[in-house]
Image 1 (tube, helix red, strand yellow):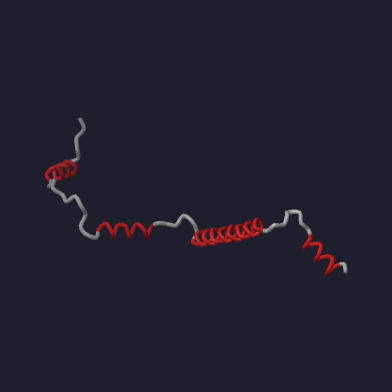
Image 2: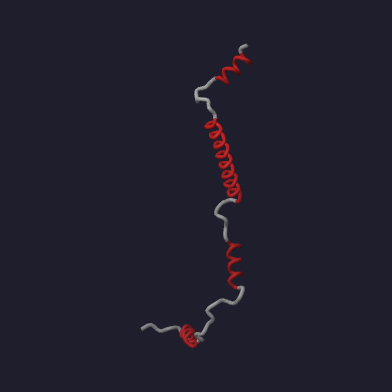
Length: 98
């Protein structure tokens, strides 16, 4: 059998003799301090401007959808057909080729 180092044997005996009734919860405020230190050490996974770019893209897409919806509703409410070239013909007839 292997022989234990006398220092290690003494530490093992001290650990056996230690009080088993340790508090289960950390003292008040320790968890908050640990969490705040942990947050300070976190390195952001993406650059700071990426979030602003995503927000700007989201608002731009909403604006495009709203604009497209208003154009679609205004076209759906008009009585003219899709192949009605009267306004374009009138513009050419009156301004370009009189």
